[in-house]
Image (spheres, rainbow, N blue to C red):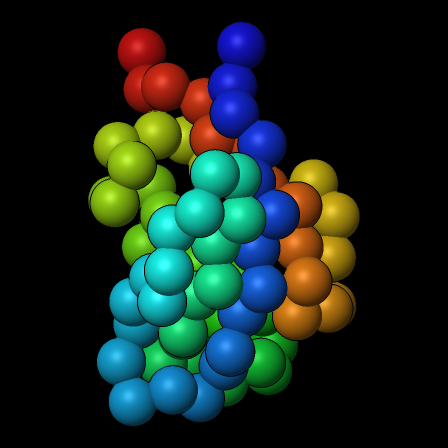
Length: 74
């Protein structure tokens, strides 16, 4: 069973980083622009590396507010 996080993204930031980690809420600055799925791709790659997990966006593909599922890599 995975863990669900509620993520708010801030695209076009100077660097990609988690701004504050609080329970299951993560505000994240993303360097990529919100064009052609670039920000979503960067978010998935960043969270996957940070948590060492498989990442899936459940809600909010075109929104700054997203719901993501993290599953441990097997």
